[in-house]
Amino acid sequence: MKQLNIGLIGCGFMGRTHANAFGKVHHFFDLPYRPVLKAVCARNQDAARAFAAKWDFESFETDWRKLLQREDIDAIDIASPNDTHAEIALAAAKAGKMILCEKPLAMNGPEGKTMVAAVEKAKVPNMVWYNYRRVPAVTLAKQLIDEGRLGRIFHYRAKFLQDWTISPELPQGGAGLWRLDLKVAGSGVTGDLLAHCIDTALWLNGGIDRLTAMTETFIKERKHNLTGKVERVGIDDACAFLARFRNGSLATFESTRYARGHKALYTFEINGEHASIAWDLHDLHRLQYFDHRDEGRVRGWRSLHVTDSDQPYMKHWWVPGLQIGYEHTFIHQVADFLEGLGNGRPASPTFREALDTQYVCDAVLKSARTQKWEKVPGAVKK
Ligand code: SOE
Image (tube, rainbow, N blue to C red; front, side, top):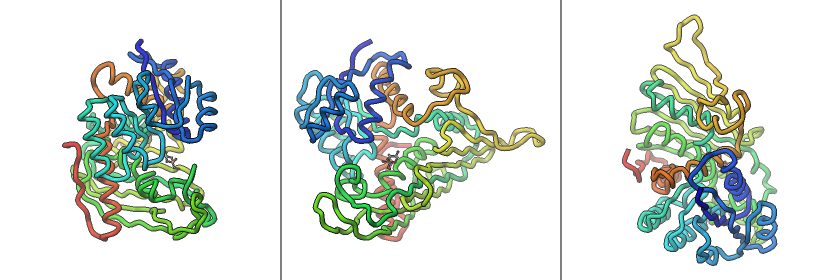
């Protein structure tokens, strides 16, 4: 097994999910490469040192440019805030490093396009962390759709609900709260939460042709942690949009951080001519499946407990009936990336595939401004 030396940038929540995945993947998967936690990079020296010690990184840096210059680093993993993705990715591609980038790919489509051009020019393997594709129940949904079990798709319905920004006392900006700062995040729930729903939807149901959206910013001003001043809030707190897929199906998408009682309620339901499927992140190991072709007397929604060895990814884990969870989606993503390095079939979504999600987000935000239906350009031919 060859070594793949990882340089991780960012040691927040996402840095932890990625470090955990790199550290565990070889225990469960037989892969052509084994990740080595070479270095972690964060601006704050104490934070970088503490993270390196806790997650077993061999070294730490405080300047990502130095990390990129290191010859002992093969792959750069970008887990820092959204406004840093493009600059780091462009430089990493130039330095010939493989790149894994946290979602969303970029602040917007045009920026994402420069990142796609850079990795494709440098011919470096690249991937964006849209982890929910790798929930075994979601991957099973993909298999069922691709096998044609649902038949023609009529409806796609998705939502991602949270409730952590309802208090007007919550500041914006700085560590942990940069997601509320437009200049750093690029958008609010659209890029942070709906991007997940969109990525899954494009993967399961193909491209989106056009859409119409509305957004709202419920709390208009918040104290900014970095300036100490009360500043205008630029992000969308909530967003809903209607869409038409290229395959003719209709869709509704909704996301908010103001749904009291919901912490991370990501759900989708797909209705086809023969069958329907539904999934819920709070019950992530189950896939609900209804097949009209079942014998009438026993027809009904089946709750598939996705834990058996013939279901996606599950043969790598425990024994049938014992479920896995959130952290494993990141481990699966690393496994697929390493597998792809070995067999030359890049793990998805690549930067180019993730650019499609970015284009949908751009169209959503544009439509919310223009109050019109907007056409969505495609980065990948579908
Ligand atoms: C926001 O609270 C957040 O952490 C997102 O940034 C993640 O992408 C999502 O998976 C969970 O919620």
